Image 1 (cartoon, rainbow, N blue to C red):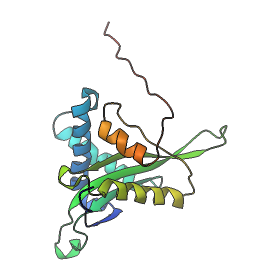
Image 2: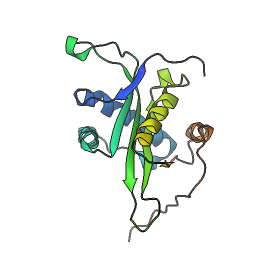
Image 3: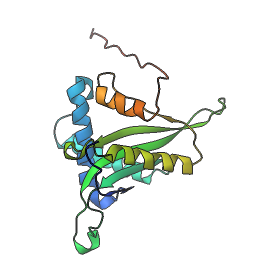
Image 4: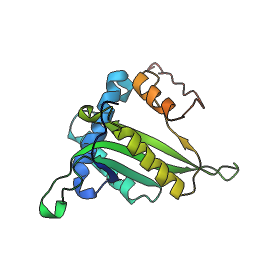
Length: 175
């Protein structure tokens, strides 16, 4: 880590939904470079859908959208604008009651703008997600990392994550 980014982790505000959606699109575009499977649909429809998904998550008590604000002193009420450089989306999943463990958390997305990578932003976002998860009494966190994402694999393993399941997939040929 070359330096520690100044700023703070906080819950995303809906008045900044366009900037949060842009961060989410950035994460998706990064993954599309690793595998075409992750490509986002073209056009404004996909961006509009990102905003609607974020709005739904913001209303869900079992989900949280965290951002890293590099300019936390900016007061939106006074026309100041925050500088969102990182995003973490976390949610709680409920398993069927036949299992002993009926809840688990899932970190679905984490991303940091290239200009702020390797400065501890992702780690601080994930630590805040862990706090959110613990506050809900959940003891286990899962996530998925693309097998071709060496940087992501190293990051998560350095935080203590280990293999649980392999996700296998196959494309079916058209008839």
